[in-house]
Length: 237
Ligand SMILES: C[S@@+](CC[C@H](N)C(=O)[O-])C[C@H]1O[C@@H](n2cnc3c(N)ncnc32)[C@H](O)[C@@H]1O
Image (cartoon, rainbow, N blue to C red; front, side, top):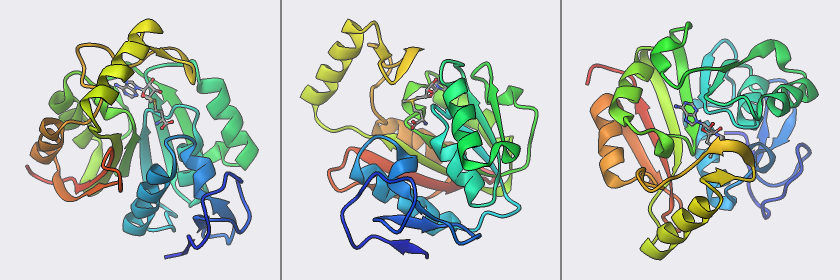
């Protein structure tokens, strides 16, 4: 794989820095930039995603679920994929569109706000569905994942980078902070985030739900244990 992770994680969008990912066109990109937030653990898990699915996505169709500010959608497009990026909120849509323009990949990404039900996505036969910090916000996870699986081609892949459980105090603190902010996060103004009724992390039960729907091949934990990468294959389950 085309990675260079010899030096500490930096935040430059391009160049020959740490955790560099090289596009099929030979452009060196900083994975740290596209991961955006979450820190080095998430960068490492994102790196694993591209070790698994490859760095030449030319001709592949990627569904980026919960695109946020659109950086990961742009990365998939820069690696050659045709991307459909969906989110339940429009608040970050202008940023995401601007990001795609900045990278010259507007033609390859369709940013589409939607209802939250993947069954309503018009397109099908995706090769890869990706989430980062989204599944922990979904109340009826199995229903959601089953609808998502109908949009993937047989043997299509899923890669979910999700917040795992760290420690009870941390979880409690996080819930209190979000409750005080009326469940909003400054990075996603107007978007309701975690609440008292949803787990604010991907619990083992939720990981088992993913296993019920997809043929899960890898469950990788970040070093400190509070981020997961779940990789699976779409198939009869
Ligand atoms: C914590 S943010 C993560 C955004 C982005 N993936 C990232 O890592 O920066 C969660 C995102 O999930 C979106 N979201 C919530 N429910 C969703 C659903 N049912 N389908 C798609 N996106 C959803 C939110 O609007 C928000 O943009």
